[in-house]
Length: 226
Image (cartoon, rainbow, N blue to C red):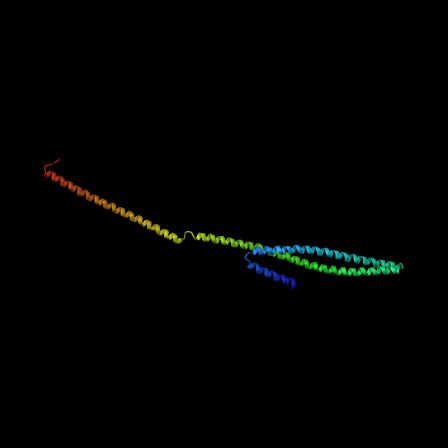
């Protein structure tokens, strides 16, 4: 495992730990994504600069190679023509271009390696960004679930504060008492009516007896209406 990969794993593990302990995970994720997005933009700008520089190095290397070959051909022509001094000058420049080509080729190869490493890091940054962005969606859904659960709990508590089975039992007892009271009152009224009826009958008999006594007395006194 490379040092960069190991460091990245440690960083991601630390971030996940922070995420689980955060009071506002979405805010932490947004902060991380903003920082990660800026790193991606900077890395992309740096990559473009490296690609441009590598293209320049390659051009220098290719030009030096082409000029080296041209000077070598000129030296051969000069030597065939018996122009040894011209051939030496051409060979001397050929050697300079060869050294230059070697130097620029080394720089170009080194630049390519750096570009490959930078591209890998950039790709990793984008992968991490996508991973954390997916966590954001997950935590938003998770927080929404918690919010809805809290609303359901509040609704259930408010429903629990209303009538309960015991209240209906007490209400049934109260209605039963009212029904018993009503029956008792009806029975009492019936008994009273019967009593008044009996009293009325007795009074009527007593009145008739008094009337009979009065008629008897009148007859004795000689008053006879019949």
